[in-house]
Image (cartoon, rainbow, N blue to C red; front, side, top):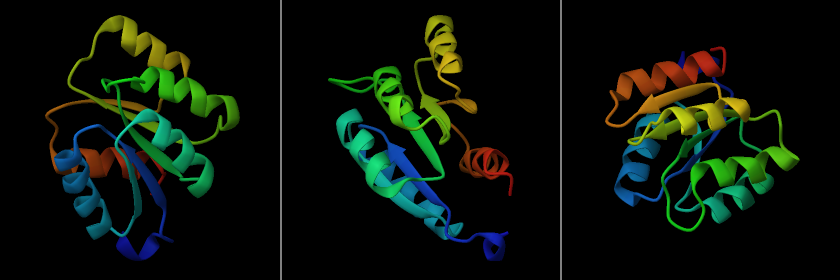
Length: 125
């Protein structure tokens, strides 16, 4: 699988630096090129600059939550694949995410292998 990757770009947006580092390291070992943002505003900017193939987005963040962040991203980019990662899944939030064309919805804590698998499927690898 690693050889099949042509350095797919993944943007991670999460306000937990330790979790970002963990996911970044794990996905880089799988051959992905990773960009990280610790808030929604930086995530929106990085999405415009780097044009990632996929975004892993946390829902609960200070200042701008994941849904708001995704609403901004969708104004300029309706193609990027989005995987939601959250410890706070409620039906309304899930509905909002689905309305914004989210590929997958993962709850924290998650198995590393499961996240890698979900990303691979979302990217059709």
